[in-house]
Image (cartoon, rainbow, N blue to C red; front, side):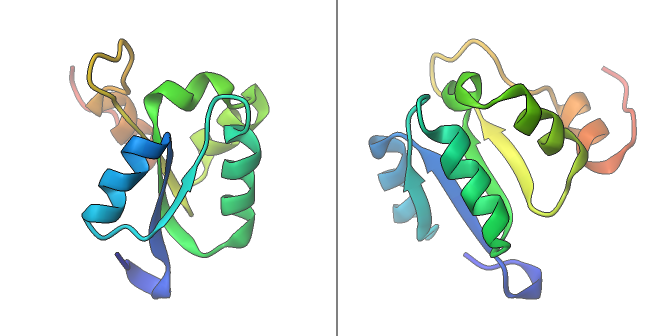
Length: 107
């Protein structure tokens, strides 16, 4: 799947989730767990080949606070945490809009 500037959409998650992303056309996907997600995500950001990187929400805990702070302020690539079935945390639409667009919307 391609977006503007010839950059692609990528995904990071556990094997079974990555297979699903590949089935819907997201060919750039990397398998990771909480132990190596920080390294994998940092590498994908550094490559500069992706306009959006989707990371499964269950891996958020494996990302360093330093990288999470960086993600909060950048939009190229845009890093989105995808909620998993049965998951307990997900980014609200209002928080996502504030982070991406810099605009507050009512909750």
